[in-house]
Image (tube, rainbow, N blue to C red; front, side, top):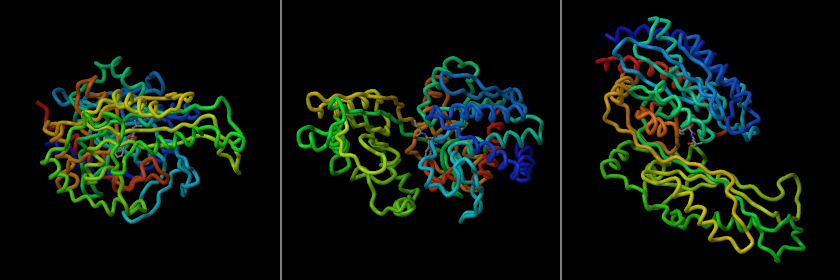
Length: 465
Ligand code: BES
Ligand code: ZN
């Protein structure tokens, strides 16, 4: 019966694609960069834009203040007895720099023709505005055709996902009853390939710290003091280089103590996916892999922990040279975590590792820290089966279960505070340049993402008991 309801919705989605794209372009113009306070007004503008869309479709929706950036929450009741699903996504984006590496303005979206047809290029195209719009546009089409949704829906859109989700847990706790549902659909991940849909069942956790090493009481003339003092930038570089041994293993004490090995069955299933490591590397201009020796590429990306330096600062960085020994040096570091690593233990280990290597008179300041553990989602629930069925309806092939090297803190927080598991259904592709210049979303992924969300709703509606 729900199939009969779905068919005209799909026709409506196809007919309205151009308008859907126009709306996506509209929101992509807003530089809602959550990490940089300079963009706070834009972050608010993007929240208001999202709330307006939901209200326009018929949701009871509003921008809701939170500790830092606001949340957008909307509700729409479906028929009595149908499942109630929380849809999660984020309207904030990563910074767009380096701007000079973009072929077009990151906040002036362009539609270009490429190998897979049209694509939309802009910061946030796939992460995550384009993906948020796949479910909003599915709701819109369903409302336009039937005047109601086939299930009860609550939407929660966050504005801090790309910058640590500081406000999320307090907001979830304060609005627990309002946000509780039967399951959560998170639309912020990827497919296996353009014609192979996927559900993500593992996310890595993350810890972020900025370590600042302070040495001499002021910047020094590098001729007068060079050879006489320990240079903080040299020292920091040595410590950063020390983090990994020659096999790629991280040398922080206790770092691997809680890491759970991957089971043989799971390894076999991953091997069956036929990951092409050579293609993965060559797409970014590389030939030689990194990471820990002795593990397959998918293990290293999905199920092994990492430590990466994301930025180094210190000394003179303006044009020309300056003969100076800077008094301090700092590095922003993230570790990706896997089950069962504890973020606090990892941060403590990292601090100890740096502290042990500081000479007398040199100090460590931690400028920022925070973290989330890794997450595994149960793969047996009826809700997950409905999502699989919806994807199968759209793509006419069996969806695969995959891991993800990235992190979506909300999925764990929703599990812990609202008691709901997430269905991580996403439409991004490996080469979408997430967090990089020229981020893009394939039109075919946007279009079929909207259709998939409609099909998944139809399948979820069949669970009505
Ligand atoms: N959408 C990404 C997560 C992701 C990345 C899924 C790649 C699938 C493929 C998400 O928005 C993200 O980037 N999260 C941050 C979280 C961090 C800032 C706490 C991440 O993983 O770096
Ligand atoms: Zn995202």
